[in-house]
Every structure is written in structure tokens, then in C-alpha cells.
Image 1 (tube, protein in one colour):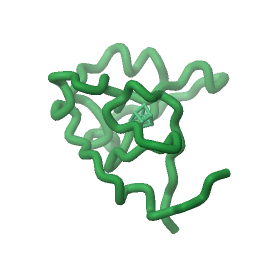
Image 2 (cartoon, protein in one colour; image 1 turned 90 degrees about the vertical axis):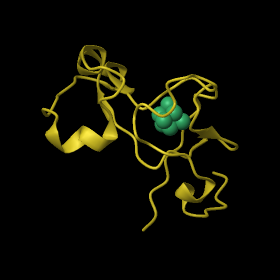
Image 3 (cartoon, rainbow, N blue to C red; image 1 turned 180 degrees about the horizontal axis):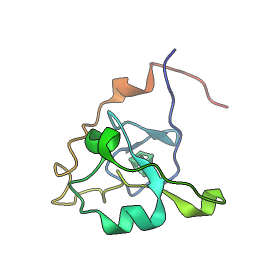
Image 4 (cartoon, rainbow, N blue to C red; image 1 turned 60 degrees about the vertical axis):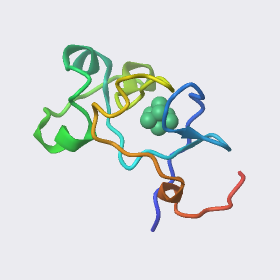
Amino acid sequence: MAQHIHCTVSNCHYYGEGNKCFASEILITEDSLAHQQPDSVDAIQATTLPQTKVDSCMQTCCKTFVHSGSSKIDVDGATKSQSNFGGSNRTK
Ligand code: SF4
């Protein structure tokens, strides 16, 4: 089953029309871990990172976020493709 990632962060390089994320993979983690790691540590290294626990969604973040037009777009190893969204036409 295709996985759909919905996101409203419209100034992210991976953001697309309809509030969809078109990154090949993303890393969601605990805020403090994201702050400790450089931009190069992202979804590709996910299996080597420590597990984290949080008390609420307010303590999580998308570490794959990168500003549109940033010179750091290629640092995390993720790619952007419209096909990543599974071809869904779902609007709800
Ligand atoms: S990479 Fe993260 S912040 Fe960027 S569009 Fe995808 S889910 Fe949103």
C-alpha cells in the first residue's frame, strides 16, 4: 500500500501542491536529537540512530525539511519526485 505523507510546510523543498510531501524518504524524530545532528544526518541514516520517546506531537519534527532554494538541498540524500505520493487523487 502506498504511503501518503501530508504536510503543510509550504516553504520546504519537498512540499507539493495539495499539501503533500514528495520526498523519497523523510526522518521524523525528537526535537533535541534533530538539533544535535548535522544536516547530513537524515532518513538515510535512520536505522543507525537511537530510538527516541516523546510526550506529545509538539516534541517531534521533520528533520528532512530544507528551505526551497537552499544550497543544502542535496545534503540529506533525499530526492523529490511527484511520483512519491502513490498517484493518489485523494482530496480529503
Ligand atoms: S520533508 Fe518534511 S517538512 Fe518537507 S514537505 Fe516533507 S514532511 Fe513536510
